[in-house]
Amino acid sequence: MLTLILERNLLFFSKDEEDDTSGRTKAMPSIKSKARTGKAYLVVIKGENFGDEYECKEKDTVIGRSSSNDIVIEDEGVSRKHCVIEPATNSYLLKDLKSTNGTFLNDKKVASPVILKHSDKITVGKTVLQFIITEEGREGSYTI
Image 1 (cartoon, rainbow, N blue to C red):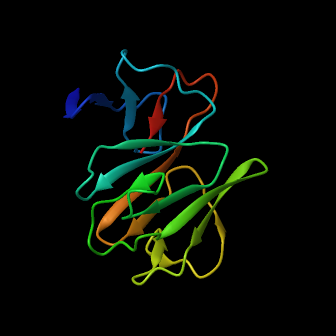
Image 2 (cartoon, rainbow, N blue to C red):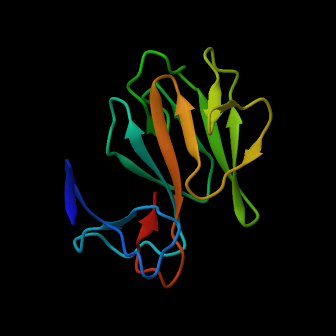
């Protein structure tokens, strides 16, 4: 088992081959964190804010360089108001806010609103965020 410490978050990485044939690694929040079943999160997996985790609330979540945003990304390639994640019926939508360098979803430029799926990767500037949805009954674990 490999343990990775990210500032205040402690993640345990393991692979249970008997139960999972996808070949992906499961990341489980430390026992200090609360159960996060049925919620959506963004986790910075590359960039200046590496390891930061943000919950997607039941309101628009604006991402950008400005301190007035819900998620502030310290990256000079990110616009002041770069993109937004909007809650929709049973899903979340990603929209670019006419950013200078564009917003990318799984390495494809976002031209119109797109529905986010579990483990999607959002790139803004040089920063990559992973969209995570936890499911009930999974005890707060998620696959990346």
